[in-house]
Image (cartoon, rainbow, N blue to C red; front, side, top):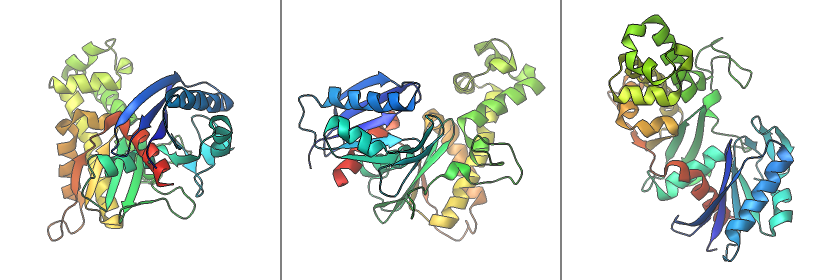
Length: 313
C-alpha cells in the first residue's frame, strides 16, 4: 500500500494529512473540532475527503484520545468527546469509501516515533507523552503492544500515590496528577503563592497573580532563570523520571521516548528527568540503562503514526 491518510483528533482542531511510505506528509488540512460526537464524525469525514481529493490514498488511520477496542474499530470510552462505544470505523468508512483503522492517539504517536522518529533503530521502545495528561505507547519486538482488549499503555492512570490527588478519571493518585503539564502549572502556582519574591519573572508574564499563571508562562520564565519556574520543572521531572524507572522494571526497553508539550522545553526538563530516572532505577548501578530520548516528530507524530498503521492493515 502506498499513500494513506492520517487523522489526529485534537481538542480544538482535527488535522488530516496524506502520508507516504517514508513518513513524509504530502498534504494537510485542518478543521475545527465540533462540540458534539456526531459532529466530530462528520468533521473527520470532511477533512479526509478534502485532503484526499486528487490523491491515490488507499486507507485512513485515525488517532483518537480514549480506549479503542482490540478490533481497532470502536472507541469504547473517550471522556473529552463523550464517545461511549462509538463505532467510529464503520461510520467514517461509510462516509469516505476507504478502509479505516482507529487507534489510540498516544499509540499512534508512539508508532510514528518508532518508525520515523527518535525510535528508529530500536525494537523495544516505550513512548511517554507529557502533555495536559500523560499518554503512552509500547513497542515490543517491533510490534505495537495493545493488550488483550486494546487498551494497554494508559500510563497516566497508574496510581503512584495511594489516596493522592483526585484525577479526572475518577481515581486518586494517578501519575499524570504529578508529572503532566497540568501538574507543572499547579506546582508553579503553589510556589508563587508561598514565595512570590522568587517568582517575579513568572508573575510578570501573567496577570500578576498565582491564579493567572499558565503553562506557557512557566516555560518562558524558566528559560529566563526564574527560580519558581525552574523548581517547578524539577518537581515535574522528579516524578516523571521515577515513573520511567518503574516502567523500566516492567518492560526493560532499549529506549524511552519523551514527547508531548512539556518535552518541547528540551534539556530544561529532559536532563532532570534522566537524573531522576537514574536515581530511582532499581539496581541501576549494576544493569544497563535505557536511553531517555526526546521525541523528534512533535505534533506530527500522531498523524504520521495513524497513517502508517492504516498502511500496515
